[in-house]
Structures are given as C-alpha cells and as structure tokens.
Amino acid sequence: MYENLNNYKIFYTVAQKQNISHAANTLFISQPAISKSISNLENGLGTKLFERTSKGVTLTAEGEILYEHISKAFDSITQGEEEIKRINELGIGELRIGVSTSLCKFVLLDYLQEFIVANPHVKMFIDCHSTINTIKLLQENKIDIGLICETNIPNGFHFEPITQIHDIFVASRAYLDNLTLREQEEASDAINPWLFAGNYTNLLSENIQNRHKTGKHFMSEMSTKEILEKSNLMLLEKNNITRTHIDEYLSSQGIYPNQVLEINNMELLIDFAVIGMGIASIVREFAAEHLKSGTIIELPLEHEVKKRAVGFIYRNSKSKPSALNKFIDFCISAKA
Image 1 (tube, helix red, strand yellow):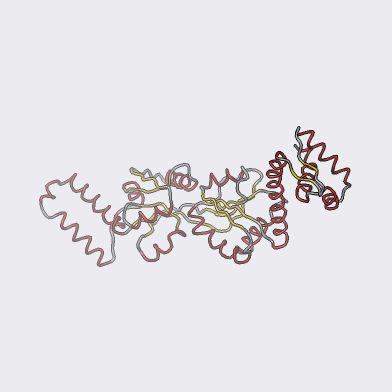
Image 2: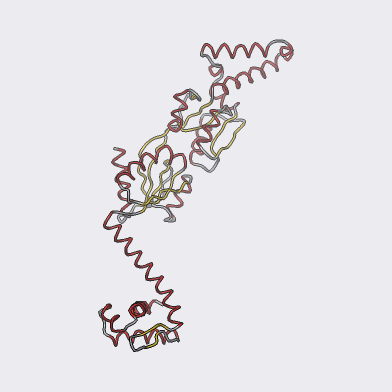
C-alpha cells in the first residue's frame, strides 16, 4: 500500500479533474508521468480504473469504489492539516488531565476556571480516577498530566506540588453524644443492671439536654483513641493512597478500630458524618464549610496526621505539547 501512496494521490486528482492534462497542471508533473502512474496502479490492483472519452476520462465501476475510499482518506488528511494549522495560528490544543473526584472539585476547578478564561481555544478532557490509576494512565500515555496526592513518583516523571492537605477525623455532635451515652449505658449495665429498671436512662437523656444547653459535650469524657476504636469509623476503601496514609497513622498511634465502614468517595464520607452515621476520616480543606458551620466537629488528636502535598505529575520531557506547557506554566505562576 505504502509504495502506492503517490499513485493514489495522482489517481485522486485525475478522478476529480476528469482530465489528465488538468491533473498534470495541478500536480506540476508531466502527462506521461501521470499515465504511467495510473497504469502502475491498475496493474497492481488487476483492474481498469478509468475509461478514456473525447473530453477526458471517467471512472469505471471499480474506479468509483476506489475513489470513494480514497476520498475519505484524503479528506481526513486535509482535516488533520487544517486542525494543525489552526493550532499554530490560534494556539489551539488539547489537554488530558487525570484527577480524583475530590481533588477535581476542591483543587483543580480553581485552576481550570482561570486557565480556560486565558486559553479558551484549548480543548480539555478530564478523567476522574484514583491517584494509583492516574499514574497508570500517565505511564500508558492516555493522559498528559495528573493531579495527585504525593506518593512514590515513577522514574521519568516530575511532581510539582501546589498545595497541602490535612487529614482529620470528624463527626456530628449528636453522634459523639450518643456514642458516649451508649458507652456509659453499657458500662453501667455491666456493673449495676438493676439501674435500668429505674430512671437511669432518663437521667442520662436529661444530662445530654443540659450539656447541649451549656455547650458541653460528652466528647470530653472519652479520649479520641477510645472514640475511634469504639465508633463506626468511616474510611475510604483500601488500595487508595489516602486510606493507606490513614491506616499507617492509626497503627503508629496504637489505634485499632473495632468497626470500619468503607466508602469509595470523600464527599460521601463528609455527608455521612453530617447525618450522624459515624466518625469519618476526611481532608480538612474539603469540609471547610461544614466545619465552620458546626454541622461536624474535628476530633482533637494528640499527634496530628502528617500533612500531605498535592500537585501535578507529568513526564520529564523537553518536547511537551504546547497546551501542556501552557498549563504547567500557568499553574506554577498561580501557585506563586
């Protein structure tokens, strides 16, 4: 096929012009050269492609079939050339970004909003994946750049940090009060079961109401370690960079939860904490509004979870697509 590409170009032009002389003028070659090219193509395909007429040439039935396919091929080539020309003239390009849903919403969107205003002709494609899958897509050249939490960066890639995040544990006040009430009831039941025949439960309920009125809560009566171990602890699923980070923290602090509920989405963790389903491990920056309004509260930690860097990862290469270079330069300058 490849040795016939020039012959196909000549065939295409002759079929369009329906005249060998006109095709020769268009292609700036001699008529004998065109005739020889057509003859070579016909011999190679084993069929006649043109019929000569008094006015020029017309396609045979086989020639019509070939022309239909060749036309599509050359139309695609022309479109490609025009798109490249537009890119060079207007700065148009495309950018494929890999990012998790949470990082996209709480970090990437701010960068994208300003970048798109400054570069309206760049086509944007967003693939939402975990950090692990984002790195894999980069290695497979399926995306141009990723926004990830810092982890082990593969050889041949560069990580450019742009911000930091802080992992914390949160819950609603009602859940913390109910958790302590439950623990007090269980402890009292184990020691004095007969108390529940009386007004002990009512007294605890009144105690909760009084504490709400005074702003005091049961959380002060249990250590954070006890709360994390005895609560319904909600974490991201395993095989996730964030989950690994939290598991390592819990282990380092000697905290061993009895009940863990795995969720595959950070925003759902926040929502479940708000409605009182348990204690959630979340990123402080992603729940700023809820923390400010008091719908959830942050549990105090004796030793804070180590903060993490969030940044862009991309190939170490001198020849990057122009859109990618623009985006990297924009993000670095915006960070500064």
